[in-house]
Every structure is written in structure tokens, then in C-alpha cells.
Image (cartoon, rainbow, N blue to C red; front, side, top):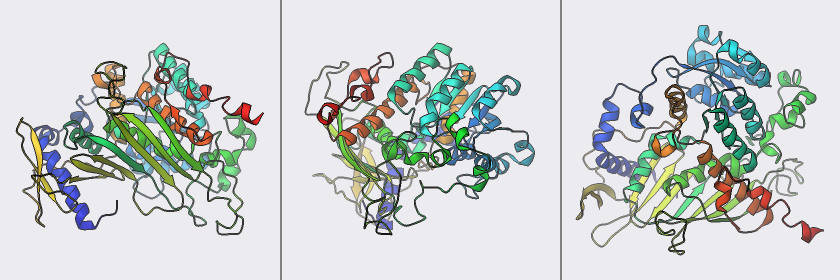
Length: 519
């Protein structure tokens, strides 16, 4: 949805106004407190006792974002491990931008010098007792999320892993069982669970201010169509080439150094656009829908640009990537009355909410985000940093993108949105609610808090918001969507896929799909 700067400002003002009015006392208390936003906002105490000693395994793109965002008052980084020398250097020096500032800028040169550096995670684990490591943050390529996490759990360490949880659902279930067996905490970094912005937005949804939600549109469009612009295609640095041989890469799960560097382009090491980008946004959509599991998925995915004769910058662009460069997916979710309350019995099969997701590589005209379309209002989440709110017109009040909002008391109590058309904003609430933190810091804070308090509760009871079971559901959505696109079929989700104790998985059910037809 393309809006003018003035219309976007109205949307931001509307969101601040309505959230600020509906959560005034709660947000005032959070802002007035001396404690960190994560602890007070999400309802847990600041860390008491020593910082949690942590090692980072994987210091590439996402690993360095996490290093930059790590909560220094909760976490003591004592070591890093990475196969690539350039990533090791990058961990300390950063990229020269605000998203990856490096350990030296984060902690100071004197503290950064004390952090031990290892060429792989196995060397690091061999020294875990000497270093006093309690937890690891894993940000390696997708196909190694599960193998590395399993080795760390076996070594007695708590694990916070980057998304997607694993390369397949069998591995997801093995990780959940292993963490339970070892009595260790395991979580996955779908950071929207800890985003103050998304939590405020979800508050509006739960309060009913959007009305009935029947459609959510999510997208992450990029333009990588010009030479040198493809952010997932990287050259191999000479410093890496001089140290990391193809044999070393094979030892740690890659065919060669090229696959290690460009792992996102290959099916055996990555999960494509759906896993790398779409999983975050399907997670957000499911948060707005109450974390219910989807009913079905179908879609189209194709390698429609890279390597297509006459389409690229040359008559034939030689490109060895395996992943799709365009995907378009449709999920069916149950509405609030679909199931009989408190059961899995279908009560109203027509109560369906549709969620679409698209990701393309040749156009980025609209920013990435999610739009939640309700019968009373539309909520737009823009690049994880802004939330815009617009009211639908009703018999008693106007609506639209030029209309400002505030809450008035409803007939049955509680606030109801009203509107008026003017260039002047209503009297502002005295609390800023659109915090721009993307949730990285807060997820690491809470993980450390749960370690120190021995908190193994579920998300609804104050435990980790994206534990293994929650993260597995996100992985199931992404992996099943990939299967639906691969086989060009509509797939209905099975309850047992989401059960960690069941061995049933979508990839097992579709392992032999279509083989008879091609025999």
C-alpha cells in the first residue's frame, strides 16, 4: 500500500494515540521505571547475579547483528567461533554501519581483546569448561542449525539459535526432545515475539479494535536484478580462500567453500525465500491470529529471473542457484469460531482467515511488512519499525487514510475508535509507544533471565516466548509451503506434525510424492 508522507504520519499518529490511550497506565509504568524496557515491559525482573557467560557460534551477517544488539548487562561474551577468518575479523571490527558495529565498538578494545576466538564450534566446545560457558548463540547457515545445536546441548549448554529452527521437521523434534532430556533451555530467534512495537500492535488486535480479521497480506519484495546488487550472491574473500579448503568445508556440512559462503542459494544448505524471509512474517501473522496453526497452504515458486535467457543482463545469465527467486503463497488459518471452544472439533468451517505471502527479486517498490485487514480498521506494520492504523468508515463516523483517530467510551465499556478529518492531530498522549527495537536485545535478555531463574515454563506462563514448540510451528509453515510450491499442490496441515512427541512430519509424508507418476 503506497501512501503519501502525510498519510503515513496520520497512520503513525493514529497508532500512537489509540495504543497510548488503551495502555496508558501500563506504558507509563514501563517508561517511568529505571529497569530496561524488556524486563519491565514483558513482566520479568532485571537480571540478578552474574551475567550469563555466552559464546557466539557463527559471526556472519545475522551473527553480527546479534552481537551488536546483545544485552551487555545480561550477557558476558567470552568466545566466538567461525570457520571463516573474515567473519572472525568482522565480529570485532563490524561493517562500519549501525547494524553491525563489532565487539570493539560495542564493548571497548580492552574487553574485546579478552574474547577467545575459535576456528570452529568443536574447538570452542572442547574449552567450554575452561571458559565457563553457560549458553551459546548459534547463527550459522541453516543446514547446520540442528547439528551444531545438538552438539551444544549434548555439551550441557543452553541454546539460542537463529531461525529457521532446522532444515527439516525431524531435526526440530529431535532438538525439542534433546533439550528436554538434558534439562536445558532452547529457543529460536523469531524476534517479533519480543518486539515492543508488535506487542502493542497485537494488543489492539486482542482488544478488538480491528474487528473481524479475514485477510493478512505479508510481503518482502527486493530488487536484486542488476549485476552486483544480488545480496545473497557473494564473492569469496581471498582471506577465506587462503585458510578454508573445500575439504574443511565438507567436514562441517558444505560441499565446498563456495557453498559455505553462498549457502542461501542452495537447497541443501538453505531454505529459500520462504525460510529466510517469509518465516518471520508468517510468525507475525500467526501472532496476530493468536498463534493458531494453519489449516492449509498452496502457492507458486519459480526460478523466473536468474539464468533465464534474454531476461538477465546478458542473453544467457549463467547462474547456479537452486532456490526460487519469486514465491507467492496462500495460507488458510482458522478464525476464532472455526473450532468448538476448547477443542479440536470443527464448529464453523466457514470461519477462515487468509494470509498471503509474496517475495520477489526484481521489484522492491513497497517496503516489507504486514497489513492486517479488519472489519473495523487496517493495521500496517512497516519494516519492523513503524505501525500505521486507519479506521474503516461506519454509519456513525468517517474512516480512511486521511482520518485521525482517538478512543471514546463504548456502550458496553472499554474504548471504541472514533475519527475526524483534520490536519491537526488530537491531543497527544504523554507516552511514546512505537519503540523501534526489533526485539533482538529483548529476546537475548529474556533468555539469560530464564537461565538465571531456572524458568522452563511455556510462553503463556512467562517462559521463553519462542521455545522449540513455538519455533517448530513456524518451521512447519515454511517447509510445508516449500513442499506445496515444489509439488504444485494444496497441502492440508496435520495435527501430529505440530506434536513434538509424534514422529510425523510433512517432509516424510511427501517423500515419495509424484514418484509413481514419473516412474
